[in-house]
Image 1 (tube, rainbow over the protein chains, first blue to last red):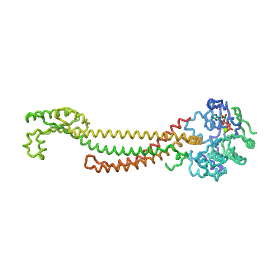
Image 2 (cartoon, rainbow over the protein chains, first blue to last red; image 1 turned 90 degrees about the horizontal axis):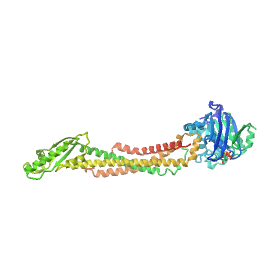
Image 3 (cartoon, rainbow over the protein chains, first blue to last red; image 1 turned 135 degrees about the vertical axis):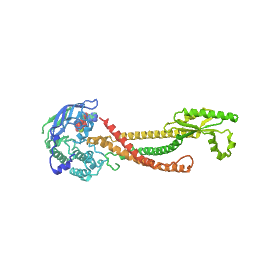
Image 4 (cartoon, helix red, strand yellow; image 1 turned 30 degrees about the vertical axis):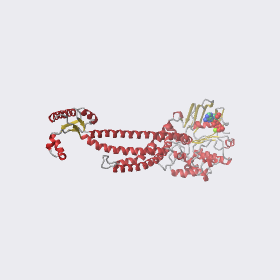
Length: 243
Length: 297
Ligand SMILES: Nc1ncnc2c1ncn2[C@@H]1O[C@H](COP(=O)(O)OP(=O)(O)OP(=O)(O)O)[C@@H](O)[C@H]1O
Ligand SMILES: [Mg+2]
């Protein structure tokens, strides 16, 4: 596991061989929940390594659903989803953890563990990967300080504001310096200044080689940071060049 | 294992609350069963040695005038010997000559002359083959069919006692197996319930890249802690019980109940029971988590 803090500290950009090529590939993917209508239909797109995309669309268009397919919380009802050029349908259960450690996710509803402190929440991806406690205690506070939570290291999520929780969730997603970062409305609860700061963090990660997808309603961000877009409309996804 | 950090808030769960009590009961009963079996085995071993070696058949004298009686009694003795020799596992059988018998009785009854014409019961010494297992009960029946003959009933009774002790041993083992099964079932239930309650936490752990075993270990650690706690309680209850029993045994000393105290290896075994129980709970929890997770989509 490569820890974000360590990389930022040394300033060396180490693109891993595995992150060349296509990180995400959808081939005529369809998704329906239960017996409902298809939320996503015939989705086909490719995200090359090192790319940065905004994912936009109306509320209920299927942004979170699309991201869930990418972080393997949901299986497509038809079509194929490839991650790092491997068909996810062929993955054995035992291969999932290694793959998931390469993917950082900021969930729309945060999904922080209520009984753990901010520090322990952010430390989770490192601890499940067996990173030493020395490194955990060194880099986790550093990152939390960077996102403005130096005073809240030991606070439990229920004592934090929405924006503070969001920053903990972001720190947890990026601490392992993932190859693929998926963020669902990561700036929905913070002021514009913090939103810019967080976007800057994602850009830094992107420069280090991480492929980034950010679902957002925030048009200001989309116009300010000139990245290509994935637009979902009526179950279809189109890839659009920067504005 | 006890101080290891946990990402699941299992310590606050109520699902495992009864587990320590059940493990305590299990360890207490196991301790009693183990100690009981060891003590019984010791007794049986001693008794078995007595019974295995030799048996005695007693033949009461037949009625009638002295000559007639002596002749008939001799016939009975011969019939009994015939039965014995036809029995597999009987190495030899020998009627004690009347002179030997009289010599045995002389210290108590005095003059040999007086005794010579008395109708005395006759004894047959039976030596058993040490390797063969002789069904003493069945032999007693066969010998009993000869008029006036009977197998020494102290030994018959002893062999029944041994049989009963064996039955008690099996019962103890059976009870132990049953309690272990119930305890395992409780661990399985508590673990499954815990997994249901903490489903969201487990989901998140998986999403950040945890292996199934990372989750399983946390449940296993918890089960180990609860099991050890219960085991210690069970042992704490068992030890005073042993002391009481062995003191009661000491008061009976000289009687036929042999030493009731536990040998050193018995104590070691009993002391290890809480650990064994905790280990059992731990493995059960771990296997349960793996089984449940592997059935998830
Ligand atoms: N678990 C589910 N079961 C059934 N239907 C679902 C489920 N999750 C989402 N949907 C449906 O799928 C559609 C897309 O939902 P999704 O959450 O992906 O939208 P979204 O673009 O993320 O919306 P928002 O911008 O409000 O977050 C919606 O119509 C929603 O009702
Ligand atoms: Mg959404």
